[in-house]
Length: 272
Image (tube, rainbow, N blue to C red):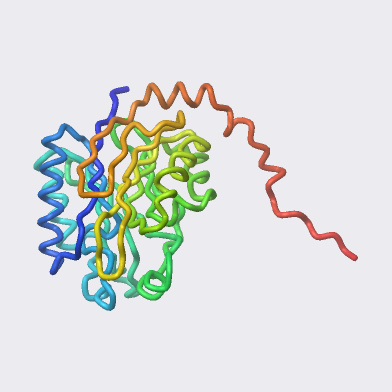
């Protein structure tokens, strides 16, 4: 199987004035990633709009197949690269708004849309409705690719669910803030190791309102290494997901095979 060249967009800083400006910035990033030889671009959480939206979330929300998704799809097909972008998603059926990411294939077709299941802080819990589908996956270049968003990856259950479902590469758009850089430095590589999969963690950087994002985007490998790490500033991080390394690491590391799920259920209560 051929290695997959991926790009992680660290940034953009600030909040685009409107969704058209955000979509234009995504298109420019898609062109740069393709020029760097990437076949997949992963952008940060809420990359279309910026994270610090305050009361504008509903006004900026679009359906999963809305006008900004169409711009991304057109650019993905033009440059022959798959793209993950984040956006506030309006559900046309019930009017709820979700913190979502969409995976678009290199032919412009929508492959998957994931709604963040673990909302962080008062802003997110007030602005968004949590998703209810924990494992969302698609096939990309022979790999099983899964989606989570930021805080989701900090729960061991979410990544383990992907591992048990057979995910090879977990894509995690994020908006990790100071002072939590240890999540990118230590926790994400640990998740990759203990679950025997790759994790592509693409963060924001710089400031938005009162928030300061850490950067530190990383590709974490199943063998405990981090083949690519970003610093604190804007960056297009290029890295390679190697299926041969993935298979070899899984053959050496028996974590999943040695599990004893019968021991992990909640203890039964004894009467009296």
